[in-house]
Image 1 (cartoon, one colour):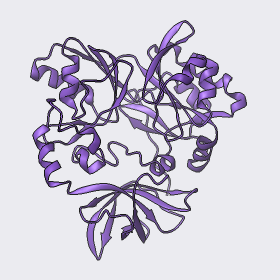
Image 2 (image 1 turned 120 degrees about the vertical axis):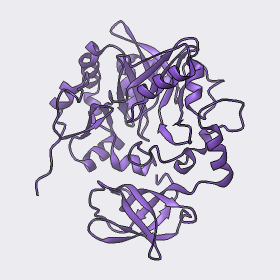
Image 3 (image 1 turned 120 degrees about the horizontal axis):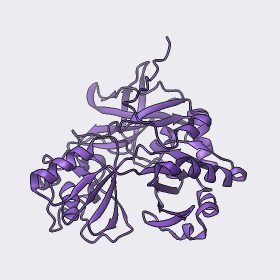
Image 4 (image 1 turned 90 degrees about the horizontal axis):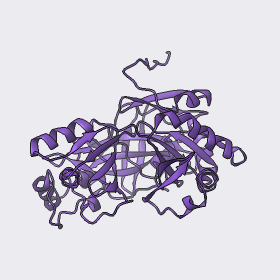
Length: 369
């Protein structure tokens, strides 16, 4: 059976780096926020090994920014999230789940505070721009809500500090985790954050002028030749090992933050006002009905997890696998799974119904590594 191909047309936007990504040999894309997101270069395992040993350039321009600006900007951003942002300083990156009136997860962006009246929400894959505009209109907030010309490029891997210092200067090494600073690139200041969707360490460069995209890629590529710089992208194996959840795959609007292990970002004890406060308070009191955990699945070969896999215990349905792969370093299958209350104790044995067979599995705490 042939593998279906993704048809790319003008509705799916390219990025400022697409020309270089394709020259580097991208073998597959997915679609994220209506944009192309590279999915694999060499192979899933080869990309994983390279990421853990060297340094990679990731085209993550699909992490679109929702800019909220104006006198009521801080008020609108706080309305959207249960995380208390009132004491956040300029230059901070803050992971902040966004919830609706039922406490359901709308998105889980990183919020960048550029000023007291200006924020960027670096979003996962859902239409936050329209939701934020609707809230601003409904509450009568004095703000503008726009998608600016900002296309992040991530530099990830253990050699990322050295590569970034060669292009942006030694000051980049002093940037603390989840902080950002403006650094010069060819006479143009770019926001550089120590962040990224991997556990290997690295940076995200917030390119705010698409015309500089190829120059930025080329400068990093040339400076990293002896560091074995390579193209890369968010890696399924590495992210599951690190317990990184993907919005739209591992969690969505039908889940709440407590089900997704995001309890510490729900500051219900603080005097802040946000949408869904009463709903989250009720969930916090009763406890979540299900929760994301890890599974170690017996065997060293797994089919592709294109659909959620049922999880059973004692012949009863107890949840579902949302993402799965095989970890070369752990020597077994690993998965993220949403399990019912009473089923998520580490060490508990369950069964996973994969498309080709039923596999025994053991509940594990996250992260795996």
